[in-house]
Length: 259
Image (cartoon, rainbow, N blue to C red; front, side):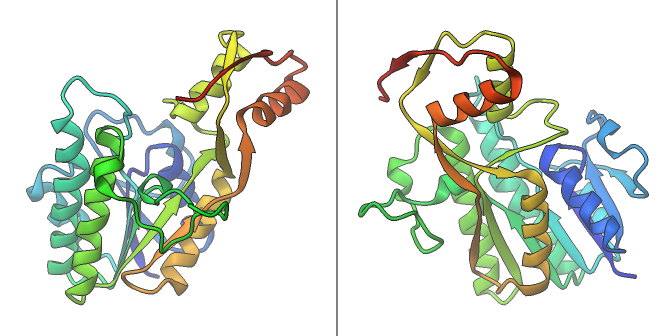
């Protein structure tokens, strides 16, 4: 049985990836920070090792004996008082993990990026994997750090280390406890804290489909390539109307212009 390491396995997307791998029969090891709670992994036969992406010494034993690594962990705060923290975790941490994985003889890495590193479509068609964003136009340290981390992953792939990149959109589903920005939006709606909505949209995807996409990337992805893990493009109003139907709560009617 192959052993696979999942970073971020105590989080929303990561624990779904870990669950999917266990169901498939893999021996799963999860890397978690010493302060990360592991309630989402209760009842799942995984090995939890404590470490930190910014601590190379803790990464070497984590990747030891693993045939593959899913690098799902990330600091996904859209705003931070100290933006350098995001770059240290998302960029430097990715570099350290890929280096440790290569030295340990890991056969394949699946790196979890974001659709935020894709460029906007110019012709009305959906953005695709080949549409790489201009880093000068990316807003905020999260998107910029994920773009830079993706470039690190591509560099390792060009050097011959098999790294596959997946780009999830906005996952929704159970286990979003922190929550993500999308989860917070849903909670704000349910708690009647959303008096108005912005005239924009999102691509929502079931988190189970995201986990399935990670498994497909492990088995069929080509090193150095990106794979969008998306669902349905929806306007913000469509999303709120759907939430209203499910919850029997009225969606806000006040629309605010985007930008």
